[in-house]
Length: 208
Image (cartoon, rainbow, N blue to C red; front, side):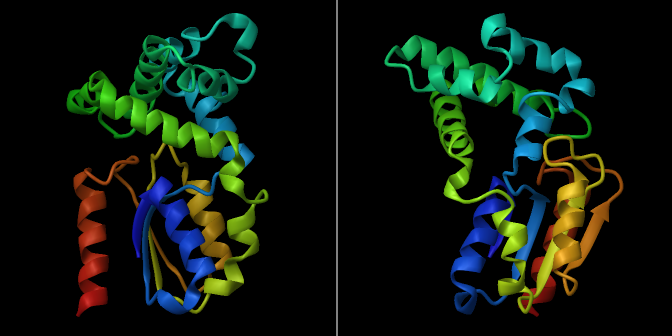
């Protein structure tokens, strides 16, 4: 099973639910949807590194609602008014795309201009986040023993602002047989050359 970022969340929960069906895991940019991770990226944390990109995301929400930006965005992303949904989705998506690479890529920002993509992307993410992915806090770490026998490779960009290295490190610590590869010259995106190289190497090793 292969997954990165939100895909790593889904991969881990799938493996923990059906451990007998998973022969190996290749994960990138670990995200376990804990309160601390959501707080870091969507409220106060990554904003200290990308204040210029964070400001439009925050200021799209009235000041009276800025103490809980995920909740405020959820209200707009589920609005019956299509214009309200699209405007919120654009800002949500731009924030993530602006922070996804070590060296920002204008083509990533353009994804936010595709409003059909942005609405689908933002609504799915926000729906799961507002519901804490329908599991208890730290579920993935607490259930780690269920998958400790599964060969696991974790590829993590050192300068991943979206899903900071701490999460990959904490997962690796509870999966002592996992192979954690911290890529020194990369951020979050699978499209970064150094990240892609390690992912290809990991999948090649599994298939050989």
